[in-house]
Amino acid sequence: MNYTSIKDIDNLDQWVQQAIKIKKKPLKNKKLGKNKTLVMLFFNPSLRTRLSTQKAALNLGMNVMVMNFGSEGWTLEYEDGAIMNSGSSEHIKEAAAVVSQYCDIIAVRAFAGLQDKEKDNAETVMSGFLKYATVPVVNMEGATGHPLQALADAITIAEYKTKARPKVVLTWAPHPKALPQAVANSFVEMMQLQDAEFVITHPKGYELNPEITKDSHIEYDQDKAFENADFIYAKNWSNYNEYGQITNSDPNWTVTAEKMKLTNNAKFMHCLPVRRNVIVTDEVLDGPNSVVIEQANNRTYSAQLVLQKILKK
Ligand code: CP
Image (cartoon, rainbow, N blue to C red; front, side, top):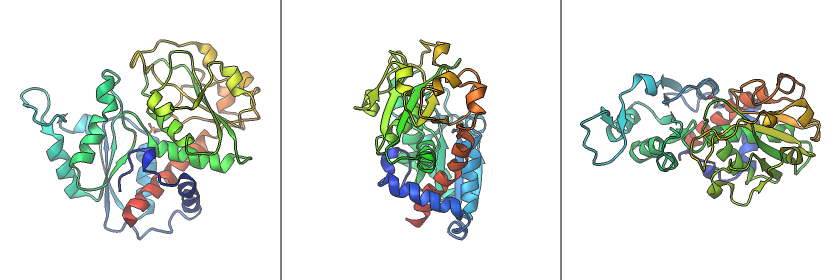
Protein backbone atom coordinates (compact mmCIF):
# COMPACT_ATOMS: atom_id res chain seq x y z
CA MET A 1 0.00 0.00 0.00
CA ASN A 2 1.22 3.49 -0.92
CA TYR A 3 -0.23 6.80 0.21
CA THR A 4 0.52 9.31 -2.51
CA SER A 5 -2.91 10.74 -3.26
CA ILE A 6 -6.33 11.35 -1.77
CA LYS A 7 -7.43 8.63 -4.22
CA ASP A 8 -5.66 6.13 -1.92
CA ILE A 9 -8.34 6.75 0.75
CA ASP A 10 -10.98 4.04 0.33
CA ASN A 11 -13.42 5.46 2.91
CA LEU A 12 -12.75 9.00 4.16
CA ASP A 13 -15.30 8.95 7.00
CA GLN A 14 -13.83 5.71 8.31
CA TRP A 15 -10.26 7.02 8.06
CA VAL A 16 -11.19 10.22 9.92
CA GLN A 17 -12.86 8.25 12.73
CA GLN A 18 -9.84 5.94 12.95
CA ALA A 19 -7.49 8.95 13.17
CA ILE A 20 -9.60 10.50 15.94
CA LYS A 21 -9.37 7.20 17.82
CA ILE A 22 -5.57 7.21 17.41
CA LYS A 23 -5.49 10.79 18.72
CA LYS A 24 -7.18 9.66 21.95
CA LYS A 25 -4.60 6.86 22.53
CA PRO A 26 -1.58 7.65 20.35
CA LEU A 27 0.70 5.07 22.01
CA LYS A 28 -1.72 2.14 21.78
CA ASN A 29 0.16 0.62 18.85
CA LYS A 30 3.65 1.34 20.15
CA LYS A 31 4.77 -2.21 19.31
CA LEU A 32 3.47 -2.24 15.74
CA GLY A 33 6.51 -0.52 14.31
CA LYS A 34 9.16 -2.29 16.39
CA ASN A 35 12.25 -3.02 14.23
CA LYS A 36 10.66 -1.17 11.31
CA THR A 37 12.27 1.92 9.81
CA LEU A 38 10.82 4.99 8.13
CA VAL A 39 13.11 6.97 5.83
CA MET A 40 11.98 10.54 5.20
CA LEU A 41 13.54 12.26 2.18
CA PHE A 42 13.13 16.02 1.90
CA PHE A 43 13.82 17.79 -1.37
CA ASN A 44 12.25 20.96 0.14
CA PRO A 45 11.98 22.62 3.58
CA SER A 46 9.44 21.62 6.21
CA LEU A 47 8.48 22.14 9.82
CA ARG A 48 5.14 20.38 10.39
CA THR A 49 5.48 17.52 7.95
CA ARG A 50 8.93 16.59 9.18
CA LEU A 51 8.18 16.70 12.90
CA SER A 52 4.61 15.35 12.83
CA THR A 53 5.49 12.41 10.57
CA GLN A 54 8.52 11.64 12.72
CA LYS A 55 6.39 11.85 15.85
CA ALA A 56 3.78 9.58 14.27
CA ALA A 57 6.45 6.99 13.48
CA LEU A 58 7.88 7.23 17.02
CA ASN A 59 4.37 6.77 18.45
CA LEU A 60 4.27 3.49 16.52
CA GLY A 61 7.69 2.46 17.83
CA MET A 62 9.42 2.86 14.46
CA ASN A 63 13.00 3.94 13.83
CA VAL A 64 13.26 7.08 11.74
CA MET A 65 15.98 8.29 9.38
CA VAL A 66 15.70 11.76 7.85
CA MET A 67 17.70 13.11 4.92
CA ASN A 68 17.51 16.58 3.43
CA PHE A 69 17.99 15.16 -0.01
CA GLY A 70 17.69 18.53 -1.74
CA SER A 71 20.84 19.84 -0.06
CA GLU A 72 22.64 16.63 0.96
CA GLY A 73 21.87 14.04 -1.69
CA TRP A 74 23.27 13.47 -5.17
CA THR A 75 21.40 15.22 -7.96
CA LEU A 76 19.07 12.56 -9.32
CA GLU A 77 18.24 11.69 -12.92
CA TYR A 78 14.65 10.60 -13.55
CA GLU A 79 14.62 9.93 -17.28
CA ASP A 80 14.97 6.30 -18.31
CA GLY A 81 17.69 5.83 -20.90
CA ALA A 82 19.27 9.23 -20.14
CA ILE A 83 22.92 9.72 -21.07
CA MET A 84 24.10 11.12 -17.75
CA ASN A 85 26.99 13.21 -18.99
CA SER A 86 25.90 16.53 -17.43
CA GLY A 87 24.28 17.58 -14.13
CA SER A 88 22.82 14.43 -12.57
CA SER A 89 25.03 12.08 -10.59
CA GLU A 90 22.71 9.20 -9.75
CA HIS A 91 19.64 7.66 -11.38
CA ILE A 92 16.42 7.29 -9.39
CA LYS A 93 16.53 3.61 -10.36
CA GLU A 94 19.53 2.94 -8.10
CA ALA A 95 18.68 5.58 -5.48
CA ALA A 96 15.15 4.27 -4.81
CA ALA A 97 16.27 0.65 -4.83
CA VAL A 98 19.16 1.36 -2.45
CA VAL A 99 17.06 3.41 0.01
CA SER A 100 14.44 0.62 -0.02
CA GLN A 101 17.06 -1.76 1.42
CA TYR A 102 17.52 0.50 4.44
CA CYS A 103 13.88 0.87 5.44
CA ASP A 104 10.31 -0.41 5.40
CA ILE A 105 8.59 2.81 4.25
CA ILE A 106 9.94 5.75 2.22
CA ALA A 107 8.28 9.15 2.67
CA VAL A 108 9.12 11.83 0.11
CA ARG A 109 8.65 15.60 -0.10
CA ALA A 110 9.27 17.05 -3.55
CA PHE A 111 7.49 20.28 -4.49
CA ALA A 112 6.48 21.46 -7.93
CA GLY A 113 9.25 23.40 -9.67
CA LEU A 114 6.57 25.63 -11.25
CA GLN A 115 8.70 25.96 -14.41
CA ASP A 116 7.33 23.04 -16.42
CA LYS A 117 3.64 22.20 -16.00
CA GLU A 118 3.91 18.87 -17.79
CA LYS A 119 6.84 17.77 -15.65
CA ASP A 120 5.09 18.83 -12.44
CA ASN A 121 1.86 17.09 -13.44
CA ALA A 122 3.88 13.95 -14.11
CA GLU A 123 5.09 14.04 -10.46
CA THR A 124 8.58 13.15 -11.67
CA VAL A 125 10.15 12.57 -8.23
CA MET A 126 7.21 10.81 -6.54
CA SER A 127 6.58 8.67 -9.64
CA GLY A 128 10.26 7.74 -9.75
CA PHE A 129 10.14 6.49 -6.17
CA LEU A 130 6.85 4.69 -6.82
CA LYS A 131 8.36 3.01 -9.85
CA TYR A 132 11.69 1.93 -8.40
CA ALA A 133 11.21 1.63 -4.63
CA THR A 134 10.54 -1.86 -3.36
CA VAL A 135 8.82 -0.64 -0.18
CA PRO A 136 5.67 1.51 0.27
CA VAL A 137 5.91 5.22 -0.55
CA VAL A 138 4.21 8.07 1.34
CA ASN A 139 3.71 11.52 -0.18
CA MET A 140 4.79 14.29 2.23
CA GLU A 141 3.81 16.88 -0.45
CA GLY A 142 4.47 16.28 -4.07
CA ALA A 143 4.19 18.54 -7.09
CA THR A 144 0.41 18.31 -7.31
CA GLY A 145 -0.86 17.09 -3.95
CA HIS A 146 -0.41 17.10 -0.19
CA PRO A 147 -2.61 14.21 0.93
CA LEU A 148 -1.29 14.01 4.52
CA GLN A 149 -2.30 17.66 4.96
CA ALA A 150 -5.75 17.12 3.46
CA LEU A 151 -6.36 14.13 5.72
CA ALA A 152 -5.43 16.29 8.73
CA ASP A 153 -7.82 18.94 7.38
CA ALA A 154 -10.61 16.36 7.19
CA ILE A 155 -9.94 15.37 10.81
CA THR A 156 -10.06 19.04 11.84
CA ILE A 157 -13.35 19.68 10.05
CA ALA A 158 -14.86 16.56 11.63
CA GLU A 159 -13.79 17.76 15.09
CA TYR A 160 -15.14 21.30 14.73
CA LYS A 161 -18.25 20.93 12.58
CA THR A 162 -21.53 21.64 14.33
CA LYS A 163 -23.82 20.39 11.56
CA ALA A 164 -23.89 17.33 9.33
CA ARG A 165 -23.40 19.34 6.14
CA PRO A 166 -21.20 22.38 6.85
CA LYS A 167 -20.40 25.08 4.32
CA VAL A 168 -16.66 24.94 3.65
CA VAL A 169 -14.94 27.65 1.59
CA LEU A 170 -11.48 27.35 0.09
CA THR A 171 -10.33 30.90 -0.54
CA TRP A 172 -7.30 32.00 -2.52
CA ALA A 173 -5.33 34.78 -0.77
CA PRO A 174 -2.37 36.84 -1.98
CA HIS A 175 1.28 35.87 -1.41
CA PRO A 176 4.57 37.47 -2.50
CA LYS A 177 6.08 34.19 -3.76
CA ALA A 178 4.83 31.77 -6.38
CA LEU A 179 3.47 28.74 -4.53
CA PRO A 180 2.42 25.32 -5.84
CA GLN A 181 -1.23 24.23 -6.11
CA ALA A 182 -0.60 21.00 -4.15
CA VAL A 183 -2.34 21.87 -0.86
CA ALA A 184 -5.39 23.33 -2.61
CA ASN A 185 -5.60 20.35 -4.99
CA SER A 186 -5.65 17.74 -2.22
CA PHE A 187 -8.06 19.83 -0.15
CA VAL A 188 -10.44 19.98 -3.12
CA GLU A 189 -10.15 16.22 -3.72
CA MET A 190 -10.74 15.53 -0.03
CA MET A 191 -13.78 17.85 0.09
CA GLN A 192 -15.26 16.05 -2.90
CA LEU A 193 -15.43 12.96 -0.66
CA GLN A 194 -17.30 14.85 2.09
CA ASP A 195 -20.96 15.66 2.59
CA ALA A 196 -20.54 19.45 2.63
CA GLU A 197 -21.49 22.59 0.75
CA PHE A 198 -18.08 23.21 -0.77
CA VAL A 199 -17.16 26.46 -2.50
CA ILE A 200 -13.86 27.54 -4.04
CA THR A 201 -13.27 31.27 -4.37
CA HIS A 202 -10.39 32.96 -6.21
CA PRO A 203 -9.79 35.78 -8.68
CA LYS A 204 -10.65 35.07 -12.31
CA GLY A 205 -7.71 33.36 -13.98
CA TYR A 206 -6.67 31.48 -10.84
CA GLU A 207 -8.67 28.34 -11.67
CA LEU A 208 -7.01 25.17 -10.41
CA ASN A 209 -6.56 22.16 -12.69
CA PRO A 210 -10.12 21.46 -13.95
CA GLU A 211 -9.36 17.73 -13.85
CA ILE A 212 -9.16 18.17 -10.07
CA THR A 213 -11.89 20.73 -9.42
CA LYS A 214 -14.31 18.87 -11.74
CA ASP A 215 -17.79 20.21 -10.92
CA SER A 216 -16.85 21.89 -7.61
CA HIS A 217 -18.65 25.22 -7.15
CA ILE A 218 -16.40 28.16 -8.05
CA GLU A 219 -17.51 31.63 -6.87
CA TYR A 220 -15.41 34.59 -8.05
CA ASP A 221 -16.98 36.98 -5.51
CA GLN A 222 -15.15 36.26 -2.24
CA ASP A 223 -17.72 38.11 -0.10
CA LYS A 224 -20.53 36.07 -1.60
CA ALA A 225 -18.60 32.85 -1.06
CA PHE A 226 -18.03 33.72 2.61
CA GLU A 227 -21.76 34.18 3.33
CA ASN A 228 -22.88 31.68 5.99
CA ALA A 229 -19.67 29.67 5.75
CA ASP A 230 -18.83 27.36 8.66
CA PHE A 231 -15.17 26.96 7.67
CA ILE A 232 -12.85 29.32 5.80
CA TYR A 233 -9.73 27.61 4.48
CA ALA A 234 -7.24 30.16 3.14
CA LYS A 235 -4.42 29.23 0.80
CA ASN A 236 -2.40 30.89 -1.90
CA TRP A 237 -1.50 29.16 -5.11
CA SER A 238 0.20 30.49 -8.22
CA ASN A 239 -1.59 30.73 -11.54
CA TYR A 240 -2.20 27.30 -13.07
CA ASN A 241 -3.06 28.59 -16.55
CA GLU A 242 -0.16 31.04 -16.81
CA TYR A 243 1.78 28.32 -15.10
CA GLY A 244 3.64 29.25 -11.93
CA GLN A 245 3.14 33.00 -12.41
CA ILE A 246 1.85 35.56 -9.91
CA THR A 247 -0.74 37.46 -11.92
CA ASN A 248 -2.66 38.87 -8.97
CA SER A 249 -1.58 40.19 -5.58
CA ASP A 250 -4.74 42.09 -4.71
CA PRO A 251 -4.74 42.72 -0.92
CA ASN A 252 -8.54 42.80 -1.02
CA TRP A 253 -8.36 38.99 -1.00
CA THR A 254 -6.62 38.93 2.41
CA VAL A 255 -8.87 37.26 5.00
CA THR A 256 -9.88 39.96 7.49
CA ALA A 257 -12.13 40.12 10.54
CA GLU A 258 -14.56 42.17 8.44
CA LYS A 259 -14.85 39.35 5.89
CA MET A 260 -15.18 36.73 8.62
CA LYS A 261 -18.25 38.66 9.86
CA LEU A 262 -20.01 37.52 6.65
CA THR A 263 -19.69 33.90 7.76
CA ASN A 264 -21.63 31.76 10.18
CA ASN A 265 -19.01 32.37 12.89
CA ALA A 266 -16.68 30.27 10.73
CA LYS A 267 -13.57 28.50 11.90
CA PHE A 268 -10.44 29.75 10.17
CA MET A 269 -8.10 27.13 8.70
CA HIS A 270 -4.69 27.29 7.02
CA CYS A 271 -2.11 24.54 6.55
CA LEU A 272 0.76 26.81 7.74
CA PRO A 273 3.29 28.30 7.32
CA VAL A 274 1.24 31.46 6.85
CA ARG A 275 2.24 35.02 5.95
CA ARG A 276 0.59 37.19 8.58
CA ASN A 277 -1.29 40.25 7.31
CA VAL A 278 -0.86 39.05 3.73
CA ILE A 279 -2.91 35.83 3.65
CA VAL A 280 -4.81 36.62 6.87
CA THR A 281 -4.78 39.42 9.42
CA ASP A 282 -3.39 38.99 12.93
CA GLU A 283 -6.88 39.60 14.28
CA VAL A 284 -8.29 36.53 12.54
CA LEU A 285 -5.25 34.29 13.04
CA ASP A 286 -5.03 35.13 16.75
CA GLY A 287 -8.80 35.14 17.20
CA PRO A 288 -10.92 32.51 18.96
CA ASN A 289 -12.11 30.94 15.68
CA SER A 290 -8.66 30.19 14.35
CA VAL A 291 -8.02 26.42 14.49
CA VAL A 292 -4.66 26.42 12.69
CA ILE A 293 -2.68 25.10 15.68
CA GLU A 294 -5.03 22.17 16.21
CA GLN A 295 -5.02 21.60 12.46
CA ALA A 296 -1.23 21.27 12.61
CA ASN A 297 -1.57 18.95 15.62
CA ASN A 298 -3.76 16.69 13.51
CA ARG A 299 -0.87 16.21 11.07
CA THR A 300 0.53 13.69 13.58
CA TYR A 301 -2.63 11.58 13.59
CA SER A 302 -3.08 11.78 9.85
CA ALA A 303 0.47 10.49 9.38
CA GLN A 304 0.10 7.91 12.15
CA LEU A 305 -3.05 6.49 10.57
CA VAL A 306 -1.30 6.17 7.21
CA LEU A 307 1.83 4.55 8.67
CA GLN A 308 -0.31 2.23 10.79
CA LYS A 309 -2.33 1.12 7.76
CA ILE A 310 0.86 0.42 5.81
CA LEU A 311 2.45 -1.50 8.70
CA LYS A 312 -0.69 -3.62 9.09
CA LYS A 313 -0.77 -4.59 5.38
N1 CP B 1 1.68 22.32 6.19
C1 CP B 1 2.90 21.81 5.96
O1 CP B 1 3.08 20.86 5.18
O2 CP B 1 3.87 22.40 6.70
P1 CP B 1 5.44 22.24 6.45
O3 CP B 1 5.71 22.74 5.05
O4 CP B 1 6.11 23.06 7.51
O5 CP B 1 5.78 20.79 6.55
